[in-house]
Image (cartoon, rainbow, N blue to C red):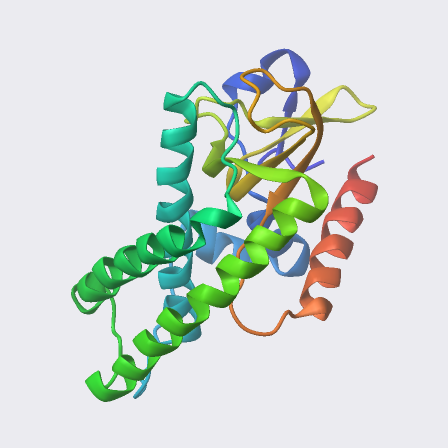
Length: 231
């Protein structure tokens, strides 16, 4: 077993943890893991005329996270566990989303390369127009399946308030996983209750653009391959 990854179970919670993304790098290419996780090398890319897909996704992520962060603060102040969106408040939510987006997009050129100003203006309009579709979908999903946001930017690991996830192995060693979830939803029967019974948990990973199912399968297979090799 790899001494960089595994530790004795008795000292598991005092040892370094590793993220799922780093696990993928280890299985796919250990040199990539050394570059990214240990040496912190990053590949440089030539600036393009438009904002990169990664930075575009970062902007979307920031808008949605801030929106639900505000909703959760209001819910917690009212003594509730989760944030429930009321269909009757659709116009208010949309106004809040657009205001958040406006503030984040205004600051974006000072934090990242956004490309040509004219093209970035088009991206701003695209995000603003898509917020309504996202909101309607979010309202519909909550009504349909009973999942409601409980946390955003939820961190777990040695430096977080929630400990790392310990994966035990038959030889007595433990693999510690750390990371951050974009959003954590709870399924509850009564979202207005102060202490509702949580029947299920769902992890939301925000993605912009078309889903890459092949990459998703590779990640699952990579993790399975690593765990199978170490058991």
